[in-house]
Image (cartoon, rainbow, N blue to C red; front, side, top):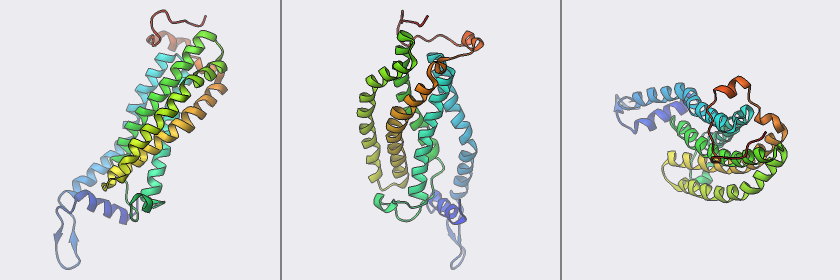
Length: 244
């Protein structure tokens, strides 16, 4: 972040508190600005840890439920990809000024330190929810037929309408926050709306079926030693059909 942007963020974080006049043209920043800078640096340092704490349990749960190492890995990676895409849009609009005037943003605005953390937690949760919904139908068809490609086609036929109908609702709700005068609310609204749109179209309806089709039967492979230690979670109910 450039020096000028840092100064603007410190001033904004301080909300003008602690600014004293030590003479003509010599403002002094103090008060709440310094703790806010420390908080910003703390969040930046801990963000990778926060991402790991969120992604790791989701990966392990998907692995235990679907018994497929590559399925769980693909679910985590593609969901992180949709979050990354939303980060890119927020940076382009607010820090680079691309189309900011159309959203009521004048000039360039530094991204608040806690916005990426909040966006990641919300977007990853929504993305994994859609992923589990889709994979549940794929897994159900796979256990019943043993045909990997046909299972993906059957699952997409069942879930595509639900995903495409739910996405516009969530996008419109998040997009409504863009009209707020609060710049942080604008950031969150834009980021979440774009993320849901990308996740429900490009990721869930294009990339996930494509990757699952390319992986075929290998998507459901799990090492024997890992299979023995994983807990058995029956999501389909007692007596669900299993592949022999």
